[in-house]
Image (cartoon, rainbow, N blue to C red):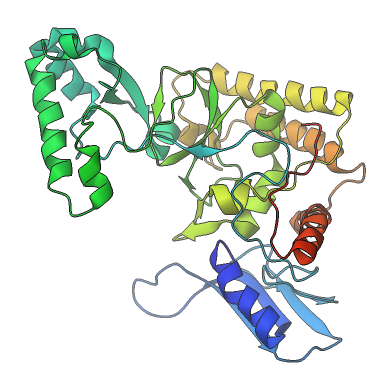
Length: 387
């Protein structure tokens, strides 16, 4: 109720229609009980009323299993942060002038085009001509844990060549039959083009992969570049045309703070979204050329350190118990470089970061809200940026 899309659905109505104000709140903490097999349950406690009060208390947990620190604040917003009553709603385009993000490819193929390495090799033995049509396939799990899956991509295969591959034709027929038998009209329609995917997103150059689901244990969501030869699934988000600066900001503490407070959750894991998290993220207003270059250099260092640990997956590198000291330092240097793009004064803790980001979000969206008030309909605009 304090994260993800449901914030706008629930609190938007409560704030606008009923003038609800939060009087006190406990930020996320882990609930324990004496039951056998105690489940991991994460809770918040919120006290609110249909009138305001001048004294509000916010209970902050540095350790979600420990005791809170009590803060006296002026206002508590629906994200349980001190600040204005901000509501992060779905946004179709990025708030700032940055590359657009989208989902990967969605085959709707009944698994007929997807292979493990072993099954791919066996298929190639049966159908040698199919070898050149296999492409590496990545979802969140494959990307983070570093194991291989493959996709038989026949969308670009000439009909004459495809008809010479009987085993591949069996797969195409199976996909067509599966789609034809669906109760969904959109899937039935796809049966007319059985070699194509429902969603196709195949950048022509390198692109960023952002896992859709990632463990909350990690300080940073593992994000990285992939080559255009690799096909990404709909279980990741991809950002074509992303520079080192974009990568640096997205893998920084500033962006991760936004993620932790704004994103939805699957259990307690991060669930990264396009319309809520990425498209609403307030990027630095006007970084100088030097600040951009500093971020790019620090971002490249993170990539270089990762590459030096051959044989280690991103899961290995970003486990808080096994994260190499060199990678920890590279990220700390990157965090400082990104922070400087926002302001010169250092952020003392995560609470100060999210308060600053909500204030910046307010600045960016105020002209859009004003325009919506004048015209009656909110216009789609993008905040100018040097990024």
